[in-house]
Each structure stands twice: as C-alpha cells, then as structure tokens.
Length: 231
Ligand code: MN
Image 1 (cartoon, rainbow, N blue to C red):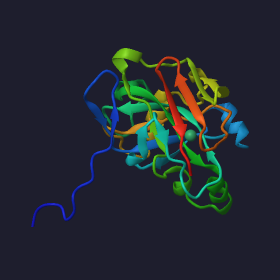
Image 2 (tube, protein in one colour; image 1 turned 90 degrees about the vertical axis):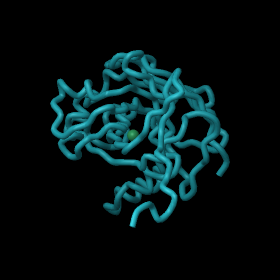
Image 3 (tube, helix red, strand yellow; image 1 turned 45 degrees about the vertical axis):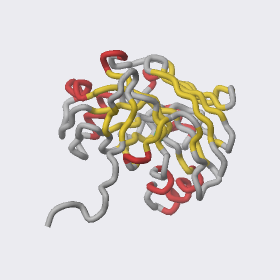
C-alpha cells in the first residue's frame, strides 16, 4: 500500500523579504520570560530561572499584516512582541559559539496569548497549549536573511497599539541572547532546518480588543502593521 489516506496538509511557510521563495516551517519554539522587565511584571524573579520553552504549531504562524481573527475562548488576548529566529541548520547540544551559524534569518512576530486561560493553567498546573498554541497565534513579519541584518545583538524592540507605545525594550536586555537560546534549546530537542524560535518579550504586555491597530518592530530587522478583527 502506498500513498496518503487523505490529502496531505500544506507545508506552512513564511514570506521572505524581496524574494518569491518562502521559508518552510517545521516547528515553533518560544522562550518564556527572556527580558527581566517582563519576568518581573509576570511575578517571577529574572535572576533565578534558566530559560524555559513552550511550543506552538507551525501552522499557527500567519502573516503579521492585514486583519487577524480575534480568537475564540478568551476575553484577554495579550500581545507579546518578539524577535523571531529562523534556523537553516539544526543539531543537538549545539555550542553557543556555533549557534549563530545555524541561523537563516530574523523576523518580528507576536506571541499572542490567551492570558486568562494561561492564568488558570498556571494555577491548576495544566499545560499552556490552549493559551499559547491556538490558530493564528504566531503572526510574523517576512524573514530577513542574515545577509541583510547580520545577527542583531542590540536595537529597540517595540509595539504600538492605536498609536500608543505599549511595549519597548532593547535586544541587549535579553537574559539569554539568541546564541544561548539556541544552545540551551538544543539540549532538549534536536533542532532542525525550518525551526522558528520566538525569543521572548519585553515589558508592557496588555490585552487587545477588536479593531485595535498594531505597529511593531525591531529596529535592526523590520516592522509590521496589522489590525485585530472582530470576535
Ligand atoms: Mn512570549
């Protein structure tokens, strides 16, 4: 017997700046609390925690443009603007000084979060999947190849909602820089080409409502603009 029993799903992919090609996606990893200011606003001590990770489905990645659906089952959809790293190579137990060689490019994304569900999950000791990994929960700008951006180590990361600055930080405030994130994550899973990593958000996360207009960016990478749709 050969062949798939149903039509195989499309390979999720991300747009690339200035290219007709797209970047195929394998998995999406996210770092929790990678900026001290955000760790503190969530009630954690940034000095005491090693990085921790959660995941989103690859097909939760959607373009950070146009109008995004307001997801069901939440009354508290939070924005988290993040630098996104795309891997062209993988491996296990990657050394920090080899880690940036695995990077294909960078983007800016939102780790959208159903905060009300996450609060319950934390309290009850339940998984975060339904608070973090819902449909369209990972809007992301087109990728910029490393040949255009280098490996940004500093620069402003910011998000405006309806023209008001809500989140602002600097990449140099990351507790675990990109190379350390890749190295640490590769101790838990064998990383692979097509993996994306959302690298954490600075302080200022807050709830979105239908009709909100978002603009965000990382100064060394790119910017994006989108609108939150109706419920
Ligand atoms: Mn996040």
